[in-house]
Image (cartoon, rainbow, N blue to C red; front, side, top):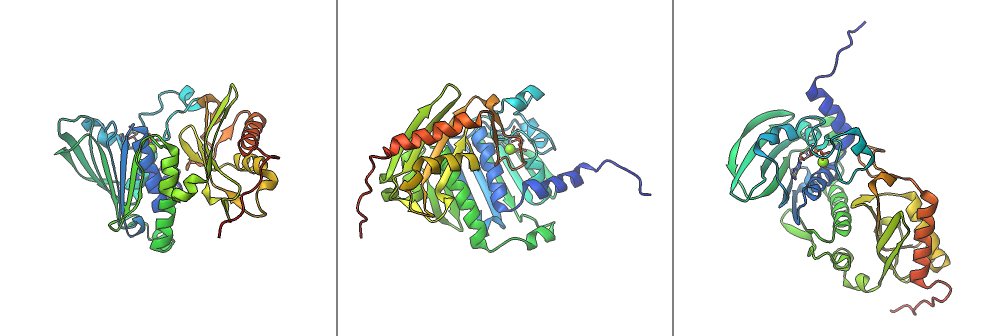
Length: 338
Ligand code: ADP
Ligand code: MG
């Protein structure tokens, strides 16, 4: 019989990476969410070759203390959770302390960060979980994370990567969603030198909708807002004459987190009911706010699924709000333009 041993940290990180870092878009998601959590007002993403060569996120957020940069790359190291009670009232996007060590286990990572505007920062280079260099460096306030050669040391995962276009599609989709979720942050996305997204960061969600879906789509959106003592809604839904063949233009944001939810989708579609043509779906950017204790985000490592405490109340709120905005029963579709 083989002896039972505790995995060493590097191996444990590689295993966690299998779950947390599925593809380049997962790295983008983790790095951008860290920047959002750091209170950044500008977040710039540069990628090369669908993210397999380079993913670089630059933010102007709080930065990391020089003597904490190395710690940030340790497993289960986080500044966002202090006690188990915090786990039941999570207000940040991250909390697992897994992203940085997982990414660093399967790529070459350079982190430059400064918590101050005095030009002094700290730089750490870590490759495949091994620290190659660290020390003081000149830096503006905020954090710059560069992830190169993703999966260079896990050829089995690399083999599963799809075309550059497919990986770029996942990244671009995520950036659109997080920008819709945070209209107060100015986002840019550049791929191989081409700018693919730029949002103004004014706090106006309709401007983000215009940046993502175009100005004519933005003109066909209706504002929605409603609340109960437990939940509040706000955002935009499209008039029934602006639809898509799939649900991909439905963005649901819960306490600042872009999530997937069957329940919310169903409630939205129930609200439209027969106003939607068969197999057509609306454009939606809906933010749902609630006290963090009413939400369980610790369902899956990717944090894309959540559990709501009072499902029937939320479902009814959404359905009725959509109905009201559309003036259902009174609504007469505009003649199709050609
Ligand atoms: P988590 O986000 O779950 O805390 P991560 O591994 O993603 O775990 O990050 C570890 C820690 O590193 C964070 O808790 C935070 O303190 C720090 N950190 C990471 N990225 C940034 C950033 N862009 N700006 C400021 N601090 C950061
Ligand atoms: Mg994180």
